Image 1: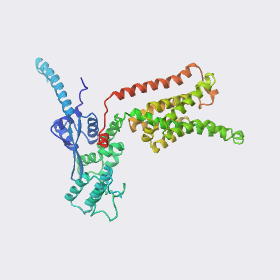
Image 2: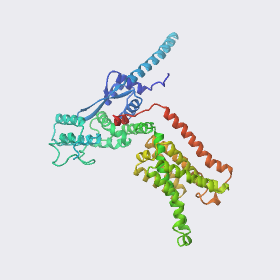
Image 3: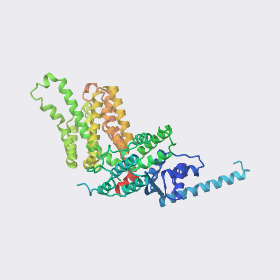
Image 4: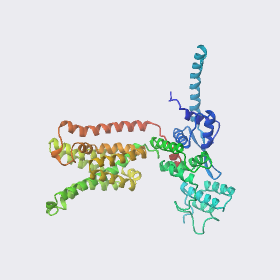
Length: 110
Length: 375
């Protein structure tokens, strides 16, 4: 069953959570790191995405903590979320492999 | 005593706010605050929450009522909390505290004002949350919208009919008020909508369907065969027909009364009254504002908006053509108009049914808030 490909912010959130459960701010900084500063999410966009991913059962809440008198909720990847990320990685890999090969054949203009 | 009642998230939030206030006032060290906040999170009953505050709260004060007991939060935090009101209440109940934590951590130190980028981002996020089709209680929104309509529609019809009869009586006042059957004939006009509204508010679904069907057939069969009456009767037949469909196809007025609070009902009735009283240009503004508010409130609001448009279609058409239904001499009539007045609502209802069926076939998407409510 072919699914719509993931948008970059969604992909990055799932990638951030693939390393282990994280809270909102941790996901934000991780996403900025993974994308080398290209994608900077703010709280509103991040939580709208997390809410949507939770609705689609790709992430779920892990635990809640109080740190520095502030409430923190950790999120983790569900098995379906991990599968979805894997499928997306496989798709991108095959696409990039073909593109790299073809560009290589043409003398490498990338 | 309320000691053994379960603590709600709202209770925990309030206790947490009071604890932070005590820390700000110097009664608690940061370590003690963390420990008590953790205890607050795991507290299950109001009694346990009371114990967290035991040596801090004034004697006899169980829990601070909402609105009071909030500590003087920093100005930045207060500004962010105001921005959070963009989100729906059910979303805020689950996510407000963690979002606030992220916002405060991410804000550059020493700033007092919420940045424009943050405000715009929160607005964007709120729009996306409001526009996502989420089932809050596991029920598809369109069924709840039909149930809500089955309760609201008779009440709106009653109000509009009553208003029309009153204005008509006052217009003919020399004869009407002193005529021998004054109390009777206006009441006869609104008896049917009043009975239907009463049945629906009493949650008597089958009785309401039967009553609506009786009135529907009465109007349909006793109307004269002139096209002019067919057009005028549409104002009654289309909403009635939709009401019967709503009563039959939805969970019924019982569910409708759960979904529609007195607040919503009062808003809908005043909106309908306002739209029928004010003159033509202002009416469009009132209707547009109400429609936008409903569309942005939730997916249930959007389905309900579509249903109300179908019910109001004849009124919309007559408003476009003539002053108001009833002044038959101003109405254009002919097969084309009659078919538009009946056919278009039927087509819209069919489209609604198609959309509802395709929405039902999607797997039940429960938002985080709904799942929490269930667990």
